Length: 233
Image 1 (cartoon, rainbow, N blue to C red):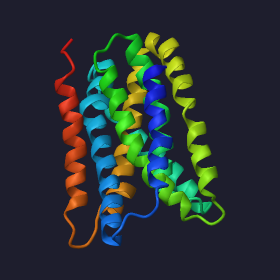
Image 2: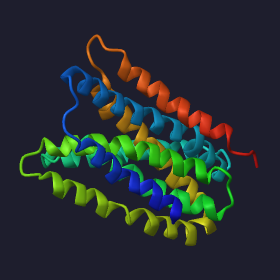
Image 3: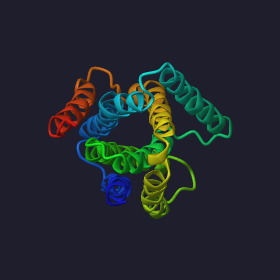
């Protein structure tokens, strides 16, 4: 619950950072915003490659079911995104933050209960990706008519308790059904992979600017360095 609570607290923290007055000059603000988008994408990719897919496939004994779950996750997130888009509520950064926070919080609870040494790493990666997602989600929602800054921050703060609740459910129930836990992790991985290439990566690019792509590299490198600190089972 502490892991998921700390990871969730990074959501309003990112929004609070985004609420700071505009950075001067304007070009620096543009660079920083796109760097944050790319950095979040890099951390999300690290979570997929270093924890969600390896752990998920291990819980499913390396069977083809894992591949099916991965593809199902991509299709599920695609369907949700299209549904939100048809209702003209398309906000990819905020949606990505919410959709990956739910299954990953369940996964943290489950892998803590199974005694996996990667639980702290997954929690750290979720927190690191929630920070830029909160930052960019805040900026995104500010662009929607009728959304006040205070209301957005309160909405983000209200999401924090969701993590510990889901973490407890994962700890209490998913640890007894490791195949189900593996399926949730792979569905989450597939969905995040879809969101990275559908929404996050295209937004991170700026013409004749190289800082945002380097942000993706930095995010993945940070996740990889975290894995080196995790003792092998």
